[in-house]
Amino acid sequence: MKLSKYPYVVQNEILDHMNYSDLFELSLVSKKIRKLVKSSQMNRLKNTVSVMYDCCYPFGTPLVYIQFKNNNILDCSKLFYFTPYGTRSIIESFHNNFLYFFGNSVEYHWITDNYKLPIPRLENLSMCFRIIIGDTFGDLKNVDNFLSSHPVLKSIDLGYWLKESLSPESESRLYQVEYIKINQLNRTNPAVLRNFQGKQAIIDCYLFEAADLIDFVNRWISGEAYHKLEYLAIYKYREEIPRDEILTAIGARHIDATRKPPAHSVPRAFIEYASRPNTDPIISHSYVVRESDNRVASVLIERDTLSFGVWDKTEEEFLRMVEKLQLAN
Image (cartoon, rainbow, N blue to C red):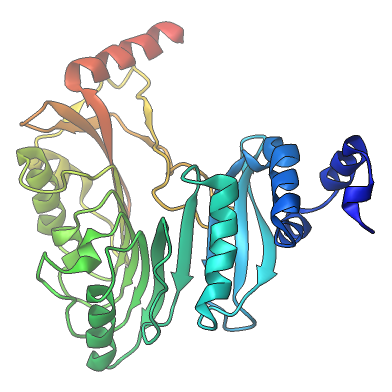
């Protein structure tokens, strides 16, 4: 079938019924076809959120996915297999094709779990790292070297089983990522909690003290650290977090118990596959205020979890929002 032989209306009808994978493969045929696909399919393509080159492939070949919104629900569509470390020109051809369609309107993620292979330098590409560090100190050193040899990553998903501590140095690029998810199953003080400089963090930790959480909140209140932080959740294995002790120590302020607190939720810094587009809502009567700019953060402690959400509002604006919720109900 030669698409160009058909009238434009028929061409559009054919393209409308093609899936994403076939559309993008067709667009590689020629510049003329690529232009046709873009002009006729922009209503479909404008819902695209991200393009992901997924090189974490224990059971198969690396895949390219696109993630898009469909009636405010995130879906993920597989496009095609690719060779991540083969001919550079092929990878660049794929990537340039995506740039033609989306430009800067979407995020481009290269997801890898292999610190032994370099990540290609492609325009607008964000690097995401997912790895479980085993029981040798050499693995930890190699991962640190990998991070140091690349620009700051977008996301790190780290399973951490070593007895040795993660680097305590705050300059490590591990702590500079926008989003970090970490399972730290050793018994050391959670270094990520102390040194994190990004936007969002989820930390599973085997053991830490109430003093670690108090120090974290107080450093945010004083403006000493966590200037970019939007959302953090920390889970403690086996033991409950002493709620009253921590809220008292951080000088938490409280919304009247008869009023409904607002729900804190922000767009996720990194959306993987069909995950929800926003962070889990934090609904709490307790909050703290940063001294430097009067900014509010909600603090929620439930059994083994502390959730911390920073509002883009001063205390006065925050309390007015509470009043509006009261009137609305």
